[in-house]
Length: 166
Image (cartoon, rainbow, N blue to C red; front, side, top):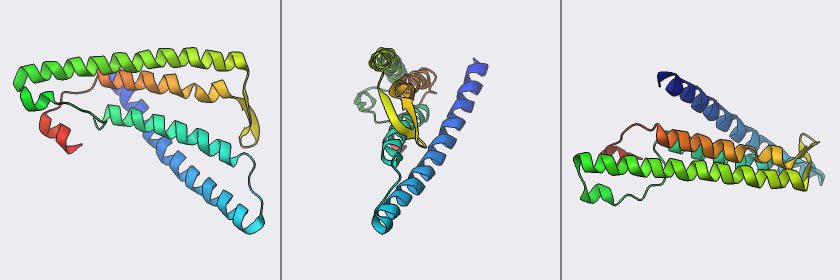
């Protein structure tokens, strides 16, 4: 169990670094694209498509971090009506259901990606001008949902006051 928590901690650190680097890269690329369009009536042909795909990756990464840090959107009316052990039990059930939902979405997204590979859709010039099959970019979707599910399963217990701080 400790090994799993340590591995999850390493993965989450890598996700944080990825989000920070991706956001910085997005700002620089978007600014360069904007400057080229305004001043030189040209642009980087692959920049818009790459920015759209990075937005998807950053959004999914943010979901992973939100689930891991217990800072996700949560509508939990039970915290006003239940106290103590019954509230802790309901929170465990909600976390398990959230994990099952995320893992189900991971499975469904794998089926979706299979259809993308069958369709043989190619994103022309997405990776610094190099073409890439769309399914490879979308592999981040099931990975992200699976990581969110794992984060929900191994989330530490939280009290109502901790939830209110989020």
